[in-house]
Amino acid sequence: MSAERRVLRTDYLARVEGEGALFVECDGDVVTKVELRIFEPPRFFEALLRGRSCFEAPDITARICGICPVAYQTSAVNAVESLAGVDVPESIHHLRRLLYCGEWIESHALHVYLLHAPDFLGYPDAITLARDYPDIVQRGLQLKAAGNHLMRVLGGREIHPINVRVGGFYRVPSASELRALRPELEQAREIAVETVRWVSGFSFPERVFEGALVALHQPDSYAIERGRIRSDTGLDIDASRYDDYFEEEQVGHSTALHSRLRGAGRYLCGPLARYSLNYRQLSPLAKECAREAGLGEVCRDVFRSIVVRSVELVYACDEALRLIDIYERPEIPAVPVVVRPGTGHGVSEAPRGLLYHRYRLDGDGTILDAEIVPPTAQNQAAIEGDVHDVVVRYRDLDDEQLRHLCEQAIRNYDPCISCATHFLRLEVNRR
Image (tube, rainbow, N blue to C red; front, side, top):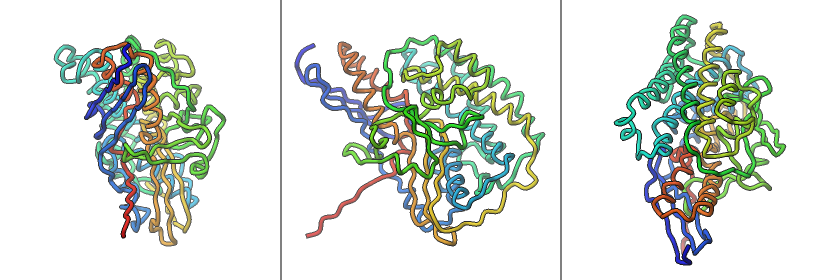
């Protein structure tokens, strides 16, 4: 390779949610700069929450994302209920988990089939892919529809559900309403199993993530709607300790903050971390699919994240069917919640990873201050590290091939840029 300066630039990343760019600069064999440039304007949701009732938080924060609104609603109710000292009945937890399964199914199906698979198959997008393989794209849409229908029945509508409230739900479905979803979910589970087999046959570049893996954990179930924050380096904390172990910093090229694990640097959250920390909690069918796909109990290969997401699709369908089978309609849709002054913390596992909420409330439940840390912000440093290592390892590729591989490395994370852009530091110097 020559010692000339080499620049790779993608002004607008495709097949990601939100607006971002990629800039890579090399000086000979040395990679001198890698930037995931998030230039989408901040959306000020944390400021919007100030002065509003904590009971409005689930509906306000759900508008942050059209793909993972349930994650925002769940972390919001968890934060308020933790401060109020309320533990909702197990039947309400089951319904929240079932709703969350719907979100995982529709979000993972969207990413696997429409956003990420074209990278591995040599297509620029899913529309072009559909011209040659309409059955494959139709299969993905069918899987996504199953998740959408589950969200509509439980959440009131597919996008930005309106049925979640602090303490429970505004309305709970009848057993017959949920049983009616069974045939579609059974078919979705079959498609999900086929999806694992399909994506495991792709050709994968090599890239092993070497930092800490962070995800929620529960001893008796694959953590989704609640759990303790764990890492493979020994961290095991309640959500209330989040700020003691994690920190955010501003970088000049992004309107989203970069998260770091204090004393350990960058880390990774999302499907790979969840899978690796919670393999034993997967259903037998999901484990069987993982084994057939060649996955071990731990997976750090970021390019195989599409396989792990597909295994989670199997699990989400499996879990949804299990929850429907054991469903007993709660006697009341929600329990009373009496707020008190203080700070509440809530976490849940969005499809893209750990989502943290913190609210400081006054005595009547008015939000005085809010903090939201979405998974894409937590993964930004890991994404840039991956792109750096991909450039080093594959630097003999020509510019176009290397640029495409760098974009693929970013899409491994299914980044939701709009979720991440919640920050703007404004400094005014007056003379």
